[in-house]
Image (cartoon, rainbow, N blue to C red; front, side, top):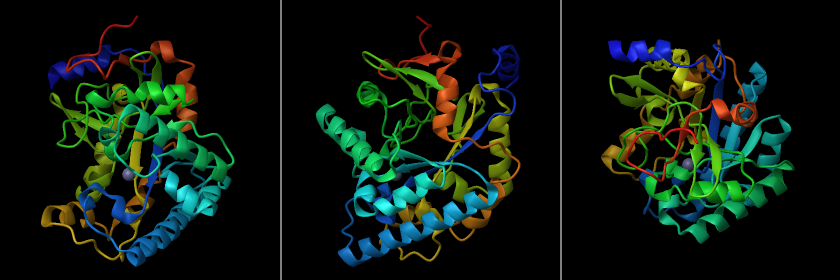
Length: 320
Ligand SMILES: [Zn+2]
């Protein structure tokens, strides 16, 4: 720990200033798209119910953001734009960023390069059509940008994306590149590079603890979650606090999916408190949309750490 502290003091001036911004991001997908429900047959009427509930809960989120004059980033599944273009338009019209969460929520690890290119291009087109503005941000379903899918970075850059937010710098059974920088960095693909804005973590000893959202947001007691976030915010290497949520997490009365015990716990734990928790998170911070942060960082690219996810496992290689 003491070694940690001294490195912290010696680290260069943060790229985003001492009042590091928080990015609130929402992955807009229906309730049954969660990884824990993979392989579960969900009938049509339940899917439609989830779609309606997703739209109304997103409406609640938009109301709360408007009440606090906060602008956020919404990573939306392309099929949602096809089914409900009005919802995507409402998000954009309220001043929020519409970004891509893939076409049909397939994970990158389940796709070939060509399939990913098609998935990304189709989602970008559908979202742009619905939102009426350019889509330049991407988040992979289930943070599935891992070492073996690092080729996806090149495809994002090819298709005109400015930034990615898919690399979780943690060790996890399904995702993560634990050696990746914890704050914004330049991710080097095979040919080109792209800005990466990873979800928030805190450093405990030599381990990164994920605190960006999802189960951690619902599972950890509120005060602990908030103090973890302020720790992350004070650490110059975290650069910015990227948080992620899903509309279904704010829908306590949703019909439950027939998940196994672990899945049920991970999915529904704490779900009755999430609305008030989100409200509490919305005070005392400086908020920024991911695209605005990315544009700010883009002008300072030479000062950001560089990391090549396709190489490794290993440490960040030196700047070119
Ligand atoms: Zn998702």
